[in-house]
Image (cartoon, rainbow, N blue to C red; front, side):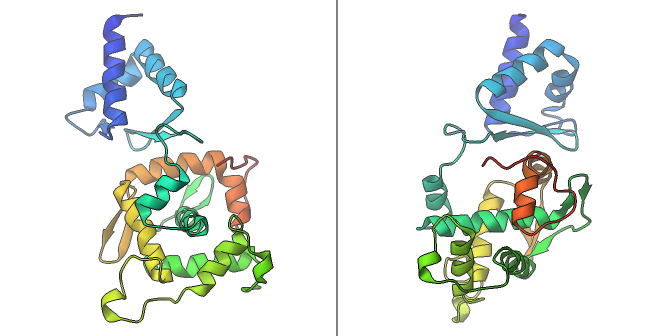
Length: 244
């Protein structure tokens, strides 16, 4: 192994793990990007290192993006960490956030080969889509007996969603990210996605970033089948199963 390639591989790893963009369009990282693909040994060192650490490397629009693999307890988030970061208390609140994220994913994708033409999504659109998909999941029943509620089930998510008002009544709380309303939950979710550099907001419109497109396209390809089926999708659902 060439020691220079090892040093360059560690430089690339360090850049990716600290959230720096490695892109053919960036003056600061163009050389890294080009050499990553031109130098076979360097490419192998980086990809093997990331695989050993349980990390996944995705490319989109001539840029590289890193994400934690499934169950990665070192580089990923635990449920408790996510609850603390987002500002939640209960598991079913976190599952609702997950469901909103999956719904956002499906807003921009209709099958495994096509990125839809939507450029953005509004909070009100997301509220409507979450309601529609939950209705499809629970067969149009909106209410269940308390004995049927399970903190890890879609029923629990549906019951929680149905219990929330659209907005909080006071004017100063109307557009606040909070656990007290459907609008608040959507805003909590998108605040987290913004912090993760997956969306940017402009006038209540949420635009996906290239990082979102990179992660979503690959996640969509690898895990779409079960998610798409469970959330009411049809058509080319694929054969792969969600393990997360």
